[in-house]
Amino acid sequence: MTDQTTRAMRFRALHERPEPFLLPNPWDAGTARLLAGLGFEAIATTSLGVANMLGRTRAGRQDVLDNCRLISEATPLPVNADLENGFADEPAEAAKMIEDACACGAVGASIEDATGDPRRPIYDFGLAVERIQAAVEVARGLPVPPVLTARAENLLYGVADLDDTIRRLQAFEAAGADVLYAPGLRTLDQMRAVVSSVGRPVNVVMGFADPSITLEQLAEIGVRRVSIGGALSRLALGSFLDGARQMRAGRFGFLTEMVSISDLHEAFAPPSE
Image (cartoon, rainbow, N blue to C red):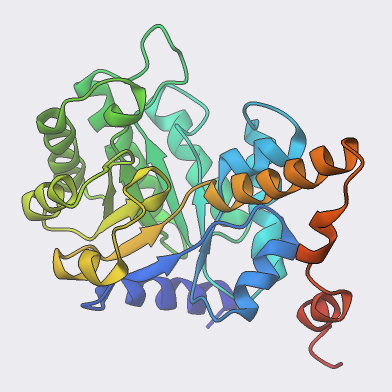
């Protein structure tokens, strides 16, 4: 049994538990190792985190794949790859991104129905479903089939239509997606409506939700996976900017908030040390 097969089995098993599991999003090898050291059971890439790291508004196809390999090699944890829209409109071409991500070590992958074009932000229903069908076909044909997550992005792009979002998720489920995901759900009532409308595990991203919602509440309504997208990257950059602004103003109070060098050495030490 290969290492990737073992990771894939562990990742799939996490979705079969009755309680939700936490899926944090590192953006480089260091943050991946820190999360592994805290005891998380799996991690996911974040395309926003990659873009932030590169100083861009959006990461490119190869950037995402390189980051997926970097994070997969950093820890023994299962890795889910944020593949945006597959960096292509045509179903087969978008689905090829799943194969490439798995070649970089991923054992899970997500494909969304956002186009990346502000003039038409969401794919038409029929094409969106065809894209998931193609993704399922590719995923199931791989030597180590990944957990495939299908994302309905309406709520992030000004389409405040929960009914259409649910209709898309139901169609993605019928197409064979393993996990369903509608980023932009903000309330427990919205999350409950989605969970009760589908039969597959649902991922909720807390980066856009009411932060007072607890993991216990998510468990009560049947959520199976909880991620945060680029939130940790944004948090880190917020702390960086706060410190830099203090320094620019001639103040250094931020120095009291730093993690110690000894803690970092302990977190990043090779296993033999």
